[in-house]
View (cartoon, each protein chain N blue to C red):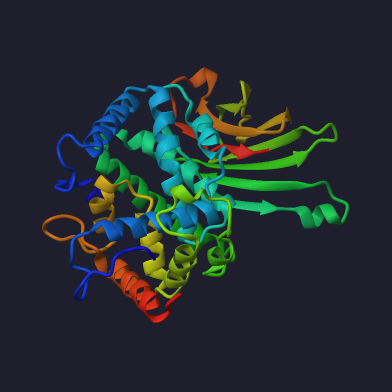
Length: 169
Length: 206
């Protein structure tokens, strides 16, 4: 190290000095080199935050299951993802279509009629759940996608809007 | 919420770049509260590298770390009204990321990466010499000394190293590190690291 050898014993109670700041700077550089944040992550986060200024409940990813083992045995490749918010559980199953798009089947629990927005890059797809809380998007292009659960058209204002973090499809 | 308690920053001298930065972040928070997407985007760009280190230091793999960062920023949107100072913002972001990371890690039964993976990942080249506070030798020495600290000290120092200096005090205090009456103190983890570095400098003449 290039820091000067300061006289006397140093303890944790001393205020930070220049050597401490230089060591912290060195630690920062170590981790910036060894484990940098993916460069495009802020952009993807910003994508999922770019929503109109409404009150939202935030659903959190609570389970994710990959079925690649099944795919190896001949079944089509799929994965299931579960999000939980204070009022809703959102389960989705993502299957690969033969044309390279993805099919997304979803369920809301408790079952209820809601409008579902699927925000994808540069566009928003829209559907409505049935009485059992089921919904489907048949063809979703690859890329980032985010679900927003809103009030059903015939019941405007009922139920807090819920949004999920963006998923990579 | 305890983590939102404003803390006075005696180490931020008036008229310094630190203060300019503080008022800029305060402006961004205010604009974000009023729904300005650009302000939110700027905050995301500025603080995500810190939160990435917080999530990775908590032992998450890269995919989980990305999910946690998304969740934390989404939650911030619903908490903006509670954030009163720039330091409170940084404190809230760090603590929320850490808690969320623990939650994901404990619920997922996912494998936790070997503690010192990052040591092996340190490249020998690729950084500009003039950017380094330490030489290449010093860097290896620093990595080796860090590796001798407890996992908790490694995590704390890794996080604090990415915290903007004026916010060091609030974050260190939230993470349970020492904070003296005058300002941020070295804390035991950093004191121990310095002792190790001094020992290796004195003990191995080159």
